[in-house]
Length: 237
Length: 192
Image (tube, rainbow over all chains, first blue to last red; front, side):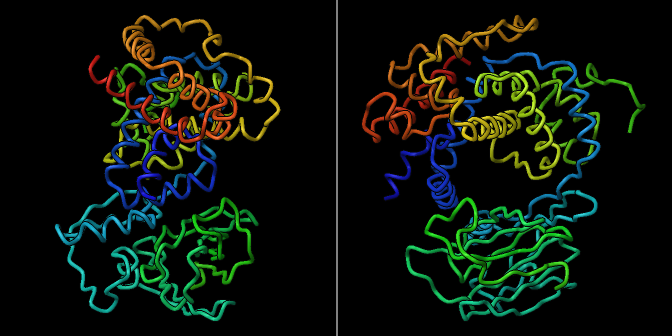
């Protein structure tokens, strides 16, 4: 299976996979350092192919883009994707954890090396547990429609939210929990939960954004295909 | 930051794109302008090549640079070069635009990728050597590798569609895309 997935690196670098295959491969990348290196190199090669097609953009476009940028807020650094969290988890045996704290307001990146006591949540990913242990943490426990419970933690100082998902019922092999951010009725995938014991963390969504969890076919979906089992407004936690 | 209206393009000189993205991540508007000047031709050229229609290519280019502005703080230099990052965003945006309008793509089925050309930009001299290396390296690919890579990259086809178009088994196309890109990569490394 993994050998088979591995050979998709070329098609992935060319954006030639279907949405579900791309998602599956993306998930695979989190666990396969060799694949990540290969994709990086193949994308470099593809980018050089693109470079040959260079063509000056119309002059008026420059003004349009610059005007649009003035209307566009910047996102804070993404502290951890689910995949990154797993990577950090894998790395921490060998080195002190590097925590990247994203402060929503100032969009500055602060690097710090720190030791955390993870005794209370030994299996949760490093970054999610960081949120749960933040000094300004707010927590809430909510019930899900499939009979589980979800603990949500937010930390304004970290500019992050995290969820503890080990209270969610186990799914079959063909299903996954998928996280979404929903703004004005538009859902964007925030990642697939590979293992409920890991939990998940993400940058603190904006005021009008809710976080929802749905059950999707393995590999995840482009858009939710089922009703959310739970929806939370992180700002009110 | 800086005086309004003052363009600092020369100040950034060769425009170290990685450095610029780092500045853009901190909200530096001038760095963003320099970044636009450094990469807009590459982004627009790729968008033109993939979506064909000039005004849609402009829209794609605008989306790409707004994405870059919004997400610069999330660019992870340890995961690759900034220029590749921007062109990866550009490619995905362009492919999404093409896949949204299947009909346009269908009508281009018989346009051999090699036949599509456009005038070289005025500053092509600077980069022509580099481009020559890429072209030379593309020549080392087998026909099937080249066709698979180009149909996917420049026409926005999935590997599934490429397999149908070229009437080849899926695993073959999947493999040709990978070994084609690997050959290109290795050749470009050797050319450096």
